[in-house]
Length: 203
Image (cartoon, rainbow, N blue to C red; front, side, top):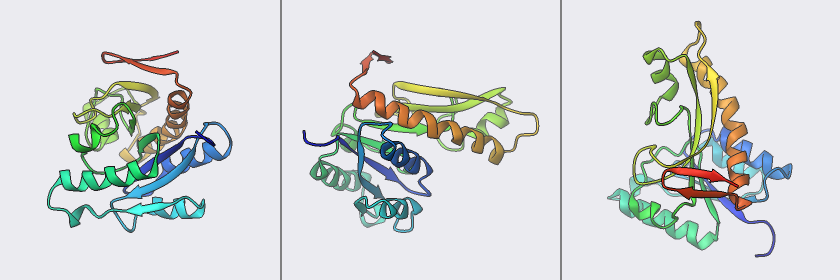
């Protein structure tokens, strides 16, 4: 393989984790470059982040497809043609079907704003506050066919403060997301991650 391996980042919104990945790549902290930014929304700001760094972008509107499987098959075609080695979800607000997941076994990562397996799904910080948790955080994990159930790669913890709102807690968690996502990508690309059952081991 000539040059550093490339990754694709899938976004639906602002793409702040995408920016953290791009920045880490440009600083040489991870041995790859972002080869594609893909979104299901034409107005996702993450696309503009890609453009600013000269990264190819693609938009596939999920509303143009009758089924989730047809949408996912189109994504698979684009990603396969691009030759990316790793697929990173960064605020991609679509539930992926087995059509997608089985095309890239153990090559899809996600970042989630909670300490999985606690508080899967949406609004992790809100759930932590409503539950009365003393600690919250974020998780990088491999994707499997469940909802936020894949093997955990890395986690970071933040305290829940007495005066926290959903926004303040989410903002502190986001700072940690921007640290551990590039780290997890680096470990993968260095060949240092192996999956044994539900456990991800780091060599």
